[in-house]
Image (tube, rainbow, N blue to C red; front, top):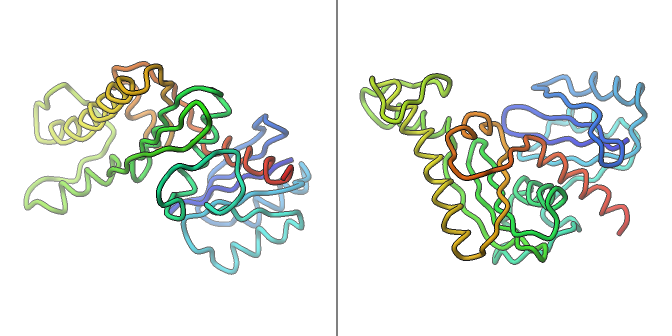
Length: 242
């Protein structure tokens, strides 16, 4: 069994793969040790990959290392099945690389636009030869909602859940629609522009706000909330082969 650990700013996501097949997944904010011991005892973890955007505490790192299996601590220096044409590869986020590799596995030999809608929104281009070429980074849904509240005197902090009319009928819906529909218009604009340059482009949407955005995007788009996990699993298998 392959254990995939994807640690973000607020929580950690855990996945078990048997080959390319996902068996289990869950999310934790703490108490990694109990979960990992349970999974190891029940399924027998043979190897693991850890991708983290934060510095782990000694306790959390110890809980992972206690598994007693080979562990790959993923970074942008790790050998992986993708070419990198980005001019500053040392600054390229591991989550962006993993999502790109996950997308390549789902739609091989195609031009891909990979959109990851999390705390930030990344829009990345992978060419059909398997090269990560370029991409953009923009504020995510929650960041935009919070910015409108914190950088103005009177606008309230609005929850992302709720009605999103074309134009808002009160301040709450005006803010929510402005943020969510605005992001969707951005995404549609990127898709249209990239297709003018590259022709046929297969578009993936992943990340925590995938469900919030998908219904307001006009272009045909494939949603896969496990794209990063699938990519990390492929990286783990590729690293062992190499």
